[in-house]
Length: 128
Ligand code: I3P
Image (cartoon, rainbow, N blue to C red; front, side):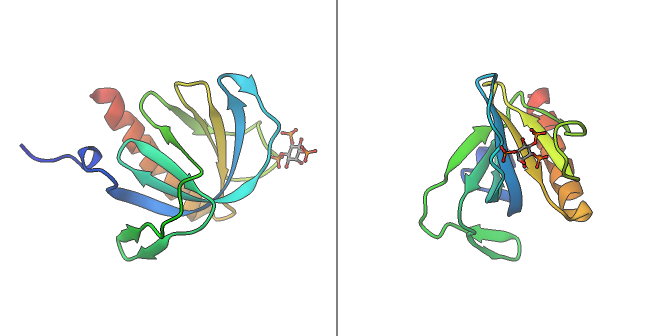
């Protein structure tokens, strides 16, 4: 059998800096608190760090610090947060747990890349 990328622990598909805020916890609305986050997509998980990790071409190595949090993308709903922020380029992610996040970049290219890869991962998980 061929190992799928989501079966390999810590296989990093994408990593980078995004502005992040949690806007709901278990369906309960939270006050926004935008902060820069180092975001790592690995398998089914989106992992948030406060500090950037060491990144090389196509690779990523943990520098020892623990993640701030992580979410399971299985069953997540992705869309553009058109009316949820005054900022441009904002992704809205709703997890099955009822936790919701906004992710933002000033770069159109950066946010389009993230949107596409998150959409691909979520669709792939939906088909399993
Ligand atoms: C919020 C803060 C956020 C803003 C939010 C404000 O005020 O300015 O940056 O979200 O707008 O309520 P405070 O610091 O007093 O909590 P955006 O930057 O995403 O627009 P909102 O209430 O319309 O969500």
